[in-house]
Structure formats: structure tokens, C-alpha cells
Image 1 (cartoon, rainbow, N blue to C red):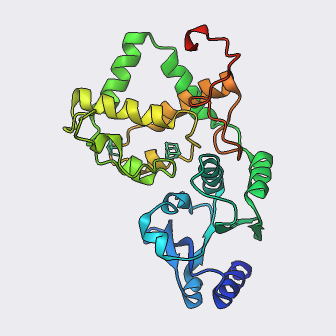
Image 2: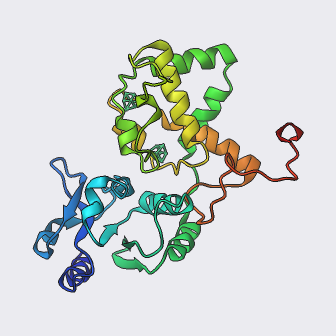
Length: 266
Ligand code: SF4
Ligand code: SF4
């Protein structure tokens, strides 16, 4: 850690950055998001496998606009979120100083292309237990699948912690908060819950980078990440697009090719 702390301290001293987003140890030993504005605070900086929060979620918060330059310590999910945000024109090259630590060695990414290369070389295979669970759900008859999902979703209390934790849920006004017209019912019951989960999943289809933060944040332990994972698997197999791996804006659900085989589009 000392190499990283020295490096970040120098960036503070030269006024290259005025905020560093990283982690410090939480009460239960977890890596807790931390905002450092002075080098002397950096003694609390930690980075290990308990630092799982996706820090990219903070980058689009209005509270950070007062800082002129921000550094960020990125775990793998954060790096993928940064790529996806760049592909969606939400961040630009050079806007942040981005670091990670691999086998005790500090890596500073000089540009987003370097992150793209790093991610492509280190992309993990999907978790086999999750894939097996998805296959098990898929193998059920339609009525049973419907019962499974409506049962899971019925416990949603609509706290929107999943939305707050997601680095790719960045709309300034979420559709669920529109009331003229009101698209989604407000009470955390039946049809309103279904609408919320379908809207959320469809808005993240082909964009979700699978960091798992939504599920980790859910107080009701609803396996909502399975929905976006399933949609992503369909997009990957049909369009070959893996979210959070490429800088080019090339989103399957918002691009159109004139030679598209689907004649109904014309
Ligand atoms: S896994 Fe959840 S929190 Fe992470 S990008 Fe996908 S929807 Fe957002
Ligand atoms: S975090 Fe869980 S309970 Fe809260 S809105 Fe999301 S799915 Fe529902």
C-alpha cells in the first residue's frame, strides 16, 4: 500500500488531484468507500479482496462537481464500469486519474484504452454457480418461471438501493419517479413491482457489467442480477457484445444497421 499512498500523496502535493476515492477498513473488516482530500488521510487507505464496492457509482454524483481533478482506486468491476460509462459518453479520457493494484504492484492507467487492454486480458469467465442457477430457472415450464419471479419480486420494498448502488443507473430523474405521466405504480406491491423490475432490467440489458452491487445492496436478498445476466447472455450470443469491455459506443439495443435481417424495422 505504501507505494500507492506515496504516489497519491505526490499528486496531492502537486495539486494534480484534490480528491481521491478509495477504500478504508469498515467496522466489519469490509472495504468501505472513502473520500480523501488530504494526503495525511491516506494512512487509512486499504485495497484487498474485501473492497468490492463499485466506486464508479460516485463519479456522476453532483456533489463531486466541486472537485477539479479526481483520482480513483478501481477494482475490476469499477474498471469495467468506467469503460461502459465512456462508451456511453458519460466520462471522457483524461477526466480522472485511475489506479489499480495487482499482486501488490500499482498500475496507473494513462488512458481509457489502457483499461480496455487490461480488461480484455483479465476478463473472468461467468460464475459457474450463477450460470447453473440460470439454466435451472430456464428449464422450468413458463408458468413455474412466472411463479418463481413473481414470488421473488413480491418481497421488493422499492427502496431503490439497487439503483443507488449501480454505476450504470445514472439518469438524473428515474422513470419510476415521473408522475406526469406516472409510468410505474408507486406502492411496493404486485404490478408496480413487476413494472419496476422489468424497466430496470431492460434499461440495463447489454449495459450491465455484472459487478453484483445491486444484489449486494438489496435488503430483501432478491436475486435481481440474474435478470440482467440473462439478458446480457442473450445479447452476447446474438451480437457478441460484452458490456464494459469496449470503448466504442456499440450498443445492440440502440443501434440500427440498414442491412439488418429484421425486415420489420424498415
Ligand atoms: S450487476 Fe447490478 S449494479 Fe452492477 S452494473 Fe449490473 S445492474 Fe448495475
Ligand atoms: S434493493 Fe431490493 S428491495 Fe430495494 S428496490 Fe431494489 S430489488 Fe427492491
